[in-house]
Picture 1 (cartoon, rainbow, N blue to C red):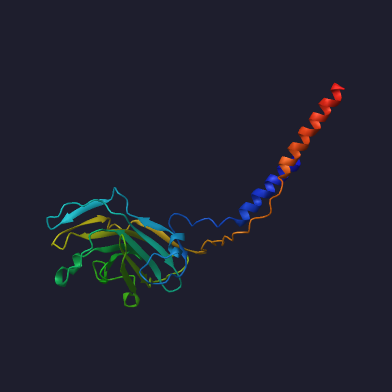
Picture 2 (picture 1 turned 30 degrees about the horizontal axis):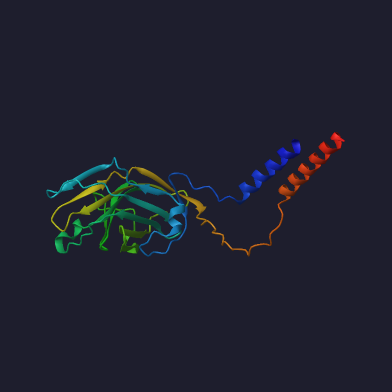
Length: 250
C-alpha cells in the first residue's frame, strides 16, 4: 500500500511540473510585446482582460433608443516602452460618419486615472485616435509617441493602442474603465455602454507572458495485432481454474 501511495504522489508531482504556469492575478498585466496590427493576438489572452458587464450604465443621445447590449472587452500587455490595450467589440451596424459628426462613430473610450489625472483615450473603429486630457489640460502620457491601429472584424471591430505611459515598469499602478460608443445607422444619434469612472485598478507585473506550447500530433502506423496481456492473463486464469476443478473431480 505504501508503495502504491508513493507511485501516485510521484505521478502528481510529474503532472505539476509539466502543467502550464498559472495565470496572473485578476488585475495584473503581464509583460509581453504584441504585434501592433489591430488584431487580438493570442499573446493578449494570457494576460488580464477588462470586460463590459451587462449591468453597466447604458445611455443614448440624439433621440436614439438604448440598443441591445453588445459584448466588449479590453486586453492588456506592457513592455519597457508601451502599455498595450486591445479592445474588441461585437457590432453588426458599423457606421462611418464624416466631418464634424465623425466623433460619434463607433469607438472605444478608454478612461484612465494615472498619477492623479483622469483622462480618456478615444480610439474609433474608423481609425480616429486622440487623447482627452484632464480638466486642466494635463496628462500623464506623452501622447506624441502613442500608436493606434483599427480593423473591422467578422463580428464588429477591434482597436489596438500602444501608450507610452510615464514611469512604466513592474509595479506601475493605474485605474481603467471602458465605454463603447455605438452610432445608429448613420443618423445623428447613438448609444453608449460602459463607464467613465476609471475605477478598475490594474498593476503591471514582472511576470512575462508564456504562450502554451501546442504539441504536434503525429499519427503512428497501425501496429501489428497483438494479444492484450490482460486477456492472456484472464484466459490463463480460466484454464487453470478449469484444470483445478477437473483434478478435484478425479
